[in-house]
Image (cartoon, rainbow, N blue to C red; front, side):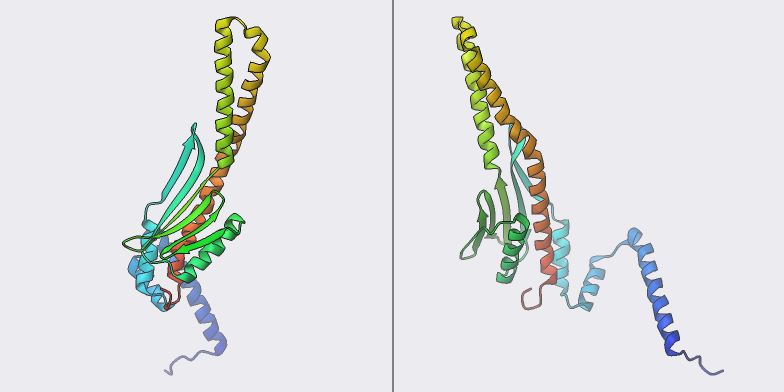
Length: 229
């Protein structure tokens, strides 16, 4: 019996169906089995990414997130994120990071470099790159200066109102100073209410922005051309 031959139209249909079956099989196996690092490295080779870069990207994914928050009266007034890179940040990566920072925070900022130390600052927002034994460390940190000033000022007004109440209570002149005491107290509460309402949302937004920058930075190593990797 002669061997079956397929027309161009039939060939196209066969490969189309084979591709669909392959995708269907992947969807069924992926949730249960996932992919090993060797599998990922093999895929990387097919698209021109070295196994070492794939391994680095996988390691960065598993690395613990180093976030820190500065608080005042239980409210977050400062947010930070530290990124440990197992490689040195290339000049091209640094340039792309600066662009990312400007787009993320909608600010031009000021760029400075001293040897292996680099920084991008915009007011209280700072991004520092410093060398380590295994590569570079990137620190992102910011503080809500206006909120801290408002909280300190509000506490000062409340403290003044408390002291005046105590003194006038002892001397018996509370009635004559009551209006001023209430004015200080209400002013202090008003100043404290602003950061109470603003800080949680502000801190949440900054954490999301910093986490996005960290993710893009750690993933960029897996997409660098060979001459930059």
